[in-house]
Length: 290
Image (tube, rainbow, N blue to C red; front, side, top):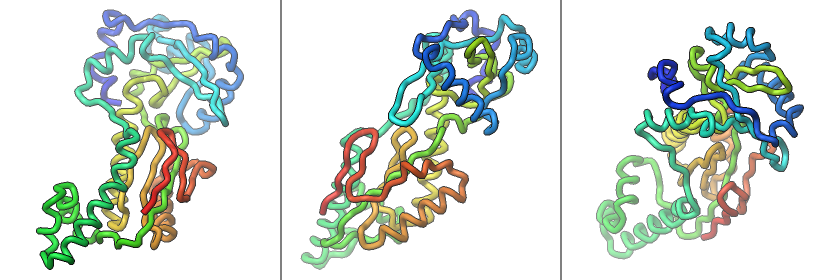
């Protein structure tokens, strides 16, 4: 993570970075967190468990330079999610101060915009046929439709009888796929059951994790648009992907999307992969209609 390489080590004390004790929830679920770290150790995401002296040696710093916690644990339906509170420790203040960009996420309006856009495109196409105008003139009503036609000449306007299906996929440990520089491992050290663990990757609760994961996620969406022009709409919310696919070709297109993500190394959570007329996402229940 290049944000950590901008002189953080030289000024972290001035910025208020300091070690903190864990929240009570982390102490309550300490065994689950430790089990998670053991699992992630095999994936190359963490190192440990260490003593303070061993951890300092691995990070190339003194024991006093190690910044721990505070950590928390959130109970979810199928797991315990570990949070590293970078706001309390001071890391997030420094990251945001040195970051011009901000991560945005879709809202309910954005989730439904794709279907409204497709309806607009279809209406414009019908007007084109009725008025015997050429395609470009027909799309003058909506600049978003017109720009899509110009940018992707292989995309075809959906017919009036077309219906849509939603494909949803979740990526496991998405934020934990972003590596950080070794010299900055010391700023997100975890202390669980008296043992020190070193995070080598982006961590939930640290401001830069979502920013750089979001960049990687959007890159994959652009690749899919390029490879499969028949995709009508797609977006990502945190680590959940969603695609709006035409009912007439949703099965082969869904298979192509999933196979491409697997080929790119995307860590799909298969139990959360759903293809249906109605899908439950982080934002709301989506039900596409004609």
